[in-house]
Image (cartoon, rainbow, N blue to C red; front, side, top):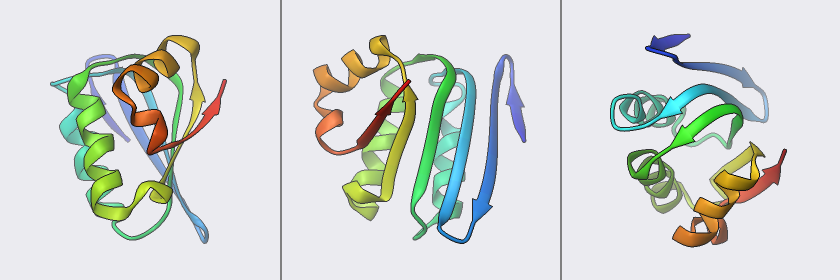
Length: 103
């Protein structure tokens, strides 16, 4: 588990892929941790759990976009998406690339 301020990142690996649990704020200070984590997972499908994420800015969005571009849109499922987060995905059209599973 990685911790920066109020942000935590925890990974659980399974036969079918990995689950990345995020808590706190995904911003310019913390998005490099998610980027590094996703790069280490590499070719496995990944589910990112947003249920405890309280904020995401453009640097967090950028990490998700890079993952989709490098591994394909089916490589990422984002679950626990709250309405405000879903709106960000709609505005940026990232919701068209990701599989979103609402809260």
